[in-house]
Length: 181
Length: 320
Image 1 (spheres, rainbow over the protein chains, first blue to last red):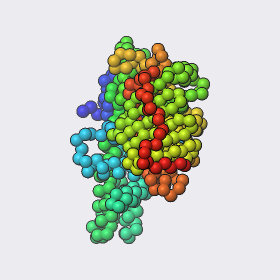
Image 2: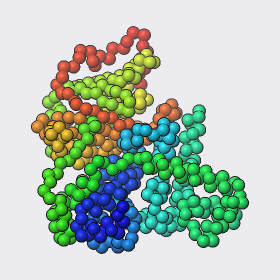
Image 3: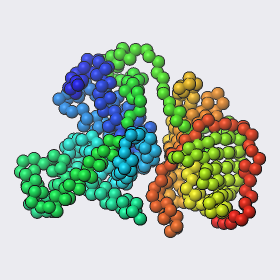
Image 4: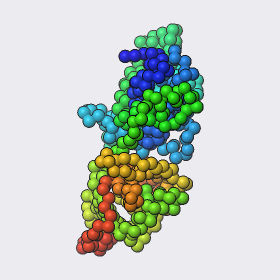
């Protein structure tokens, strides 16, 4: 598999296949992240496309020694922030059906229910917790990279993650108690 | 290191963010302290579950990379070198927008309401076209439940296995065959009853006119998989229901020749309702409902008695 640096170089020399490869590598994770931010399937798709377009345009000034993910996710997050309106604060809730429809059919039913519960609990968390948890445990970015994207210090990111996980645990506990009734 | 200090850093430790002495201190503490170790193990298990759940969520739509490229080509850049290159690479392949016909929904009820009265030429055209049709009939899928809708300018009937609702003359009649009960409501109470009936499709019909602010509306011309052209309208907005904010997002396909809706889908999110103990209990969890509608038929023969609100013998009537 070609390295990111190699792909960037090929992109800059006009190789469309290299750009497509970058898009394919990041499209799903970026789309999911934007879906969690924007809450709407279509807005997420739109933002995701815009982010890649901007990324493409910014390539000539991109430092090829850096990782693509933090740069790309920063562009996407800024796009979302720039266009954010009050209506976007519903975040994710309305997308349950879309998400459900996209799940793999062969997954174990218990796993399915557990994941469903986790995702539902996640949607109830504060936006900064949700965003940080998504960037860390879906995109696997470092605290420093998350901090760059969310414009916060690594220490703050650590706090958000820790509190976010604790809030998630409590929400799942409540959910389990309700289910046991 | 105390337990408090260890617990503060436990997540950074688990995420590999600690190095050197800091990492060693937490590791040593976890080896020595069973209580903190249990917390750490539980946290790790939670993180694994969360990661698996996050990874199971939606993927980008099919042919996404191609769509990105088309957008790059369609948006001339201020960097001429790149733009020229992009155009050269893209060639002259015709742009074809793939549209999922998965469905469109109670849009007849919800989306046209969003568009009504807006300064949007198409909305006016749809409005006009809808006024000219005498009836509409379609079936919808809400989760696993099928719903059948009959509508005329004067009345609507929405039916599922759970029962049926007839709305006419400013009143809603909710027929519940299990309870052998008809609930007649009007005004805000009608909405309340509809919430109790947990039929969001019906809710769509009832919240018309209570839209908050300006819905966001976008439209584009698309080619359907069968080659037909259609206008795709996407709208999202909010409405007040019993003081609570309900969010809508809908998509519909409109026939450009007749301006009639071909199909649609609408997603509605209701927050927990806080009015009254009973309702609060029944609506404790925010609900999201996704309704899909296909193949709406217009000017069909409406079966006789379809809007009949006669109470079946032996049923109780509740007026609210």
